[in-house]
Amino acid sequence: MLLKAALASATLLAAPSTQDEPKPVSSPIQTGNVADLGDVVVEGRSPEQVQAFVEEAAAPPPGRRLARWNRPICVGVANMEGRYARFMIDRIASVAAEIGVESESPGCEPNIMIIAASDANDLAQAMVSDRPSAFRPTRTGTDLGSAALERFQSTEAPVRWWHVSLPVDVDTGAVATQLAGEIIFEPGGGPPKPLAMRVRDPSRLRAHTRDELVQATVIIDTSKVGRIGFGALSEYVAMVALAQIAPDADTSGYETVLNLFSEGADRTSGLTRWDRDYLGALYTVRQDRARWLQQVRDISHAMTGE
Image 1 (cartoon, one colour):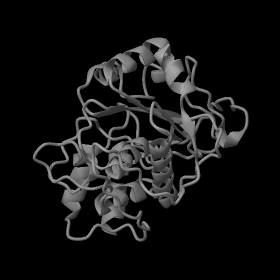
Image 2 (tube, rainbow, N blue to C red):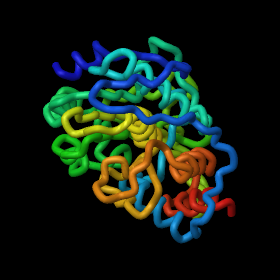
Image 3 (tube, rainbow, N blue to C red):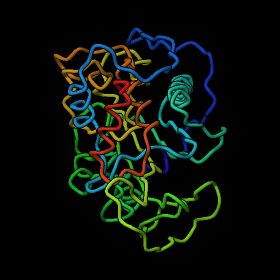
């Protein structure tokens, strides 16, 4: 299977290194030092603009709230020359460290899988066909749905991604949904805990579950990436791997790495202050909000320093 071949060639690292960015012959590389996140404040932008960006970019599963990585990440890269794979893994690990997400040691089982391919649609279709329940472990609440999965397999975008998240009990860490298989959830690194069915007082502010990212798949279509800096590409992948970003988000009015492949938009050379503030806010705000729009307001307030 294509998937097995890709996984077999995966290069796994976790700790960031100080090596120089690789420079392919076909494209000059533009890089910059990864800045300390610092205070989460967006300057010169109104609260209305910030909230509009969050609403446009964020893409939780229907009926659910935004998820984030509450466990260490393990990044795997396949079908990429070793020095490029190491650079991308290190850059993602650096961005993750800025927002408080740890990385696993080398040799770990990837929960973020990045695959480069010239036949991206064929690869995506083969992966979904080979392990359908890995992409949709339940019918609702863990992903963007069947129509979105069809788009994942047929998009013309240079980079595509797919997230799987799980609702878990905020007190026990138990999975709060019935899984069809493929996804193994071990809260706190221990064995899976049974879902505790308890009667609680309802609340409009606090939910009894939170949503956790457990798997992300990113496919880079090498035939469509074009001549862009590998550092910028790596930070674009970091953004879509660490946050649930809408593939069809119109972010042309904002200074963000999400415009990297958008014609006519203000392209960047990597993560912008806007992007770092968004990630910082996402990984700072409380996760037990009852509704995702409450999360949007929390993230917007954190980004503007309110």
